[in-house]
Length: 436
Image (cartoon, rainbow, N blue to C red; front, side, top):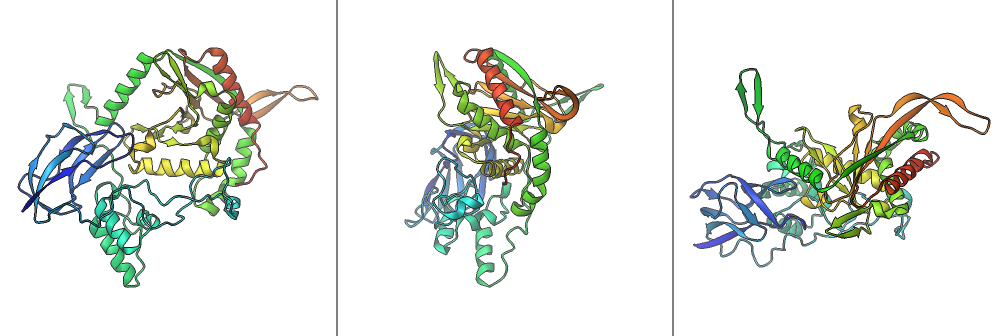
C-alpha cells in the first residue's frame, strides 16, 4: 500500500493558515474519499477539510489547536491508490463548463454590450463562491455539470458541503428523468456550539466562543490603533421611504428578493467617496494608502449573536440593482455560514445599520485596517421645520441620524464633516422616479 500525505487546501487568497479545531477521525480508522476528516478555523470563517483519498488514517501530523499553513501536509493516509487523485483530475480552481449563472453585480462603468443591461444582468465568469473538493469538481466536469447546477444542490456534508454521494445521487436522478429536487434538503445553519455556563452563586460565567474572542481582540486592537472621532447628521429620508414603499412588492415579485434600505446606503456612500476619496484610505506606518476600489463592508448579525462583515466589492462600479443583489446574496449566505474567507476580506470602508434594531444613533468601532465606518440609525417620523421658497413651515418627515466614525490620524473633522454632509445630500436627493 502507498502512503499519501493530505494537505490543507486553498480556502481563499486571504487565508494562509488554519487552526485544526477538531479531528473527526482517529488514527487507525478507515476513511473514504470526500469524507470530512477535520474541522478547521481561520481568522474569518469556520469550515472543514475532507480527505482526498480513501484508506486508513495512519498519522495525524498536528494536534487540535495547532496552526497549519495552507498547502502543508496535516495527515497521512495509507491507501491502495498510488495518489489521492488520478492524472485526469482537475485542480480545485479549474473551471467547469462555461455558463451564465444567476445574475450578480451590474457594472455601470463597463456595461455589457448585449441587451442584458436592460434587465440588470451582466456576463459572468463560470465560478462559484461555494467550496467544492477536487473529487466533486472532477465528477462534475465529466458529467458536464455547471456551477449553477452544483450551487443548487443541497449538500449533506457539514455546513451544506457537497459530498461525492450528493452529486452521484443528483446525476442518477437526472439521468432517470426524475426531477432532481435540488432544494429538497434544507441547507443547514451552522452556528457556534452553546458554550458551558458555570454557576457561581447568583452570577453566571459564560465562556466566550471562538468568534466572540476574535471580535473582542479585533475591537480592542482597533481602539488601541486609531483615535476615534464621530460626527452626526440628520437626513430627511422622505424620498427614499416613499420610493421603497412603491417598489418593494414589485421587486420581490420580479426578483424573489427583498428590497431593503441597505443597498441605497451603499450606493450613496460610494458616490460620496468619489467626491472625497481620502476617506477611502488605510494607514501603513507613515504612508496613506488611497484605495482605487470602493469595497464596502456591511455588518451582518448572525443567529449566534455574533457579527460578520462581508464585503460588497467594487461598489462604485455597480448600479442599484447590482448592489441589491450582492447585498442580499452576501447577507443570506452569511447567516447560513456559507461565506468563503475572501468575501469578508479587502474592505475599504464599512457600514453598520443600527436602525434594524431600533437604535437611533451610534458610535461604532472602526474595522481595521480601514479608517472610517458609517452608521445609520432607525428612520423615525419627527416634527421638523421645512424650508421652502414660500417660507418655513412645520411638517412631519421620516428622519434618520447618520454618523461617521473616522481615524483622526488621517481624517480630520473638516474632511469627515464634508463627506458626511455629501452623503446626506445624496440620500435626500435620491431619484425617486427610477425603476429597478
